[in-house]
Image 1 (cartoon, rainbow, N blue to C red):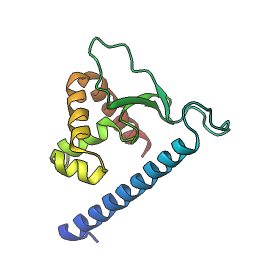
Image 2: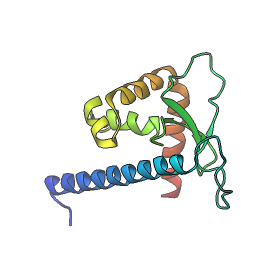
Image 3: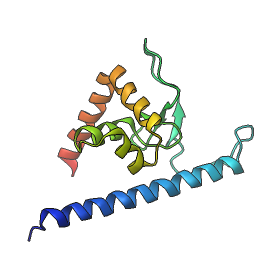
Length: 147
């Protein structure tokens, strides 16, 4: 049985609210961890998945990346462009704007970012289009064969 469009949309909104809430919790935990382990001291050794979410230097590029954009190595082992310390990928914000037709204000509200951060991420995409388009294509290909 297929749900009516309004019911499906309400489910999507609930899911997005849940994602936003979870993102807010993880950001709070990250801030607390930063307070507990300032950068001058090293945190205790981690035993599980040591490379996950490790900040790395951006790849060599003739264009300078905005300061709000950072690279992190995720579980896949690939470096991905994220917005500041949020861990939200640039490609996620791009897809929210293109596939879901959200404007900058809506994206910032849904993901708990400032409008400046969203704008910087979208500008970053414009200057690193090939890199991010390749990452999106790779992810879609993976989903098509494994999901």
